[in-house]
Image 1 (cartoon, rainbow, N blue to C red):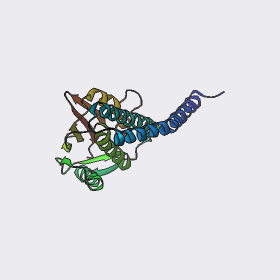
Image 2 (cartoon, one colour):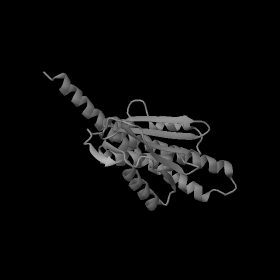
Image 3 (cartoon, one colour):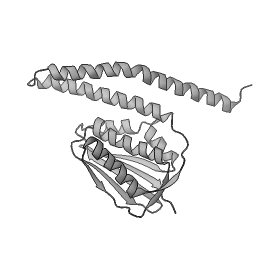
Image 4 (cartoon, rainbow, N blue to C red):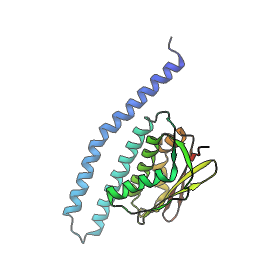
Length: 216
């Protein structure tokens, strides 16, 4: 007789395989839709603002769908954390400098926790911050520079990422970042004994607050 634990493990394995299969199969049509949108953007008359707006909406929906697929795949891959101690300000400075050098995208970086060490899985934390910055740049379509700041919260070290989205519907962006059941970002933070919160304020402010346990 198969034990409940073995049955549950089998169900999870099948579910993970299904998620990966769906993501793989859906990426090709999404890529085709994105190519069509870029083609239309090149051939449409510059003065036809209505059509260009619809093409822009199509590209935006493709980006959001791709984000949902990637997030679902990563959510089923979250592994137990292997914690290390790192200096919070040094870590955030390195990641943001890499983004600005690689993509020439301006970030407002405020390092306010010079002597705070946190405990976390470094590779998971790198993925977390990198993915959030990618989301803000490419999905949220920011209209202002992204602000990244650190803070000393006593038993925790804080990382806050904030911007003003040109998209306007920050509630929808909040749902993309933190789906109720299978969000990879919250899962990563909680796997590292931290907390994850999103604040959305009309007309377009979107703020992500992460807390990671401080090292004593």
